Image (tube, rainbow, N blue to C red; front, side):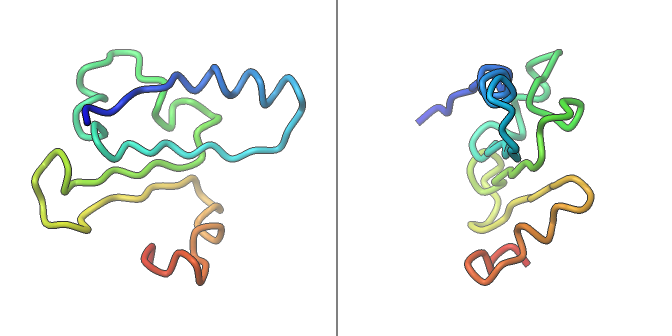
Length: 90
């Protein structure tokens, strides 16, 4: 109902401990438009080199029309999202 915030370093440290290849996605669907303004040291941004992509849904917090959202990814990674299964991304 109110969202939750997981610290990415909890996951990153484990993935790197086992030398796993990974991409980390931040689903900022609920609080993505608010959290960055409330937390000075935001670990869920592209300042964190381990974050690969972020989504924000404007229809939840900003009361925009359903389906209004933002998908951001690092340069060179959009090909991973442009698949037949995720046709809605285009």
